[in-house]
Amino acid sequence: MAQDNTAYDKPYFHPIILFSKTIAVMTRSLQGRLSRYLLLSAITLAALNNARAQTNTFKFDFGSGKAAKDYIQVTPANTFSYQAGYGFSQGSVVQSVERKGKDELTNDFITSDKPFYFSVKLPEGNYDVKVILGDIEGTSATTVRAECRRLFLQNVQTKKGETVSKIFTVHVKDSLIRDAQGNTIGKVRLKPREFTYLHWDNLLTIEFNDSAAKVCGVEITPNTTATTIFLAGNSTVVDQDREPWAAWGQMFPSFFEPKNICVANYAESGETLKAFKGERRLEKVWSMVKPGDYLFIEFAHNDQKPGSSHLDPFTTYKATLKEWIAEARKRNVIPVLVTSMNRRSFDSAGYIRNTLEDFPEAMRQTAKEDNTAMVDLNAMSKTMYEAWGPVTSLKAFVHYPANTFPGQDKELKDDTHFNPYGAYEIARCIVKGIQDAKLDIAKHLKKNIPAFDPAHPDPVEKWYWPQSSMVSSAKPDGN
Image 1 (cartoon, rainbow, N blue to C red):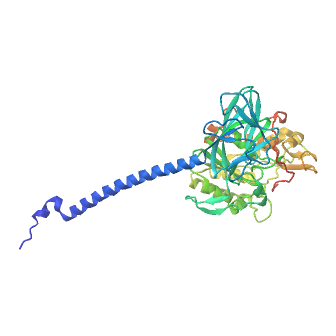
Image 2 (tube, rainbow, N blue to C red; image 1 turned 30 degrees about the vertical axis):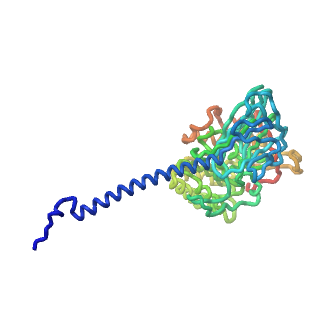
Image 3 (cartoon, rainbow, N blue to C red; image 1 turned 180 degrees about the horizontal axis):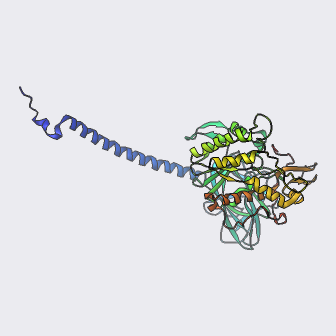
């Protein structure tokens, strides 16, 4: 008997079509559920991120008067503890001054006749910090640094009765290396001297300094969008933690507008390309970078020395630079090579001797071969040192007679490491190099920066640097 296929001849009842229709309905249902799930997940993630941001957002009202609404009051009694999570640190001795005014935030302030430090417990990341400075019945002058003497605001002066708000963007770091999910997978191998640094401790420490520092309030907000400039280098780049030593990396942040740019200085004294990688410092940087960030690379002073970290300029040195450049580009990070500045070594005619051998030229060749941006600090420093001459150049380096600083019973003579004035002038060279190379970050430099010519450095007589309270006569690693 012939099989009756009448019913199945109708498209709706055909078994294959029926199966396909069923799958389609199920798929649409699953897609709907998936969309709702993804939407809810996105909303949940946004809520979590917002909650985290709120958790790490602080508003502090400095002074013993009534605190402004939604602000945490900070009085001289608030000494830092990890339990409280904030307070004055480094043995700061401060006082509160109250004025008669209508604004609860600005009618009192904290001040001191010595540098004072305020610390806040924070996870690593970038933060916008607003400081409210001034005195509604007097004048003020405040210099603001953070972490290891990292310069942000220099000699901010207010007229009598005036208060101002200033913002800077600062990087807070720790030594843990984390994967994309935030799991700890390693740790930077720190040197013993780094254990006392103020930039490996999950704290943001702000130094208030100058002739009349008057702080009405501090506000801290996470910044997840700023382009971060990571610095990899040695003692000529690192944030030197004690007077009179300084390096260009700690002066560099003061040249950029806040919110858009953040400088993350991972340089350390005595480092070479090999050591920086071997101690997992490079891995730490790679774990933090995001597309669009920058990596500035300056090594040579220690790489040229004999030993296990020595590199040959035209072979292993170049090969290592190329390896870092390739890795940066793979992550959509912009590498920038910085030729090392000269040592202060003059010949009898007043010209700088090349003590870095072929390393600067090897870096120039690498930049050309790999089409990589470069700041030729080596060339600019030669011009600047020779403009200073053998005598004036002493004022840019750590050259001081005995007993200039507390506990310094011997003369300091160092022709590699800078004092704050010299470090600032080197940073000026770096900024000029950024402008000359037409890097995109140049558009975020502060608009009031005067033009700079290494052949005409800023006069040392006009340099102003209120000294920090932490001093050491111990020479940094490296030479």
